Amino acid sequence: MDTILVLLHTEADGTLAKPALEALGAAAELGGTLVVGLIGKDVQPAADSIASCGAAKYYGVSGDEFAQARYSSDAAAAEAICKEANPTVVIVPATSRWNRVLSGVAHRLGGRVDTHVTGVSRTEGALSAARWYYRQRMEAVVQRTHRPWCIALEAGCHEACAAGAGKATVENVNVILSEAARQTTVTGIKTVAADQQTIRPDAKLLFVTGAGWTKKQPDGKAHVEEAAKIILEFLQHSQASLGGTKSLVDLGGEGQTVLPFMTHLNQIGQTGSTPRHPKGLSTCCHGEEPHVIGWRFVNERRAINLDPNCPWAHGKADVLYVADALQVMSKVNELLAAKK
Ligand SMILES: Cc1cc2nc3c(=O)[nH]c(=O)nc-3n(C[C@H](O)[C@H](O)[C@H](O)COP(=O)(O)OP(=O)(O)OC[C@H]3O[C@@H](n4cnc5c(N)ncnc54)[C@H](O)[C@@H]3O)c2cc1C
View (cartoon, rainbow, N blue to C red):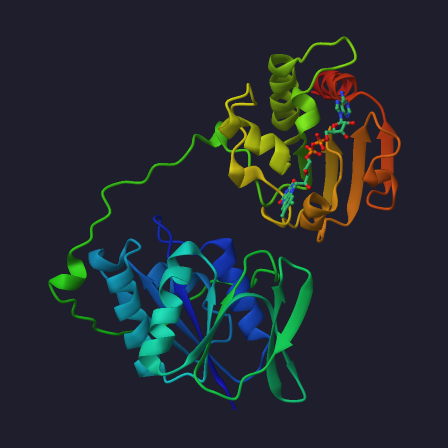
């Protein structure tokens, strides 16, 4: 029988974030002995918050030195917990903090690692992990006989564990860091202001903008400033997540006037991202295959394009509105504003 260790780190406020609860939820369904390992400044409140998750044991590495992400201290803490818990399987949420250290930890334990895993399951007693290859074109389900098997589970792929709070007994694991392991210090965190954050993984709608927003319109002129205003207003009303085509995000690098809030992080497609929003609305985007491949997990799709023969009309969208997106989205904004 497997001993499944779920390794979690606390957030700055001492809580566990959603991806942590999702990894716990996935691990709890696998059977075997569930064990939880926690890393953070003070892990007791986090352990108490998941006290009824069914874990047989809780291990914790805590202290100021483990409050923030740092390869040397995180890897040392994870290794120490693994040596105490002696797991056959280690599951972590694929946060940037765990993604950075998991391979190193697996190496130290003489284990194997799989990252970008989108699902774990047990069939006829055998544990399987699913992940996508070739830019989400092929899904493979893999099994390993080697143990320990370390798995980083992507966010948004499993329901969060709904374990109730209670009182958990945490066994503290003592980790003494050498001087070298304490050399790196986090001096601060820079993030964009909340209202400037246009990538929203939890949004219900993915709003994709294509290069058409910046092109000459039927009146012979480009209306980039107006386009920016319409797009931002729609995002504000709808709280949708903003995606873009490669052509649009590349324009900035070519010195053309572009939408200032678009970056390569917004790019959807073969060389961009593959988001998982339930619905998508494409505007001024041609719908070419290298772009649409990024819509693989978006099940309900609509597009607005002036061209009735664009690829969205050829089975890539459920509905294509043959219309001027600037006009349509201005009207949508008007209606949304009136609803408030
Ligand atoms: C190896 C490779 C990898 C690639 N990876 C990606 C990727 O990851 N992501 C990606 O997006 N692309 C990718 N591409 C590029 C992709 O093939 C297309 O070139 C790109 O998606 C086109 O962007 P677009 O639709 O915004 O622009 P365009 O092709 O210029 O289309 C603009 C569209 O806007 C419409 N339009 C203009 N004005 C309006 C209006 N007022 N109302 C409504 N519609 C209007 C036009 O009818 C047109 O269909 C890749 C290409 C290659 C070769």
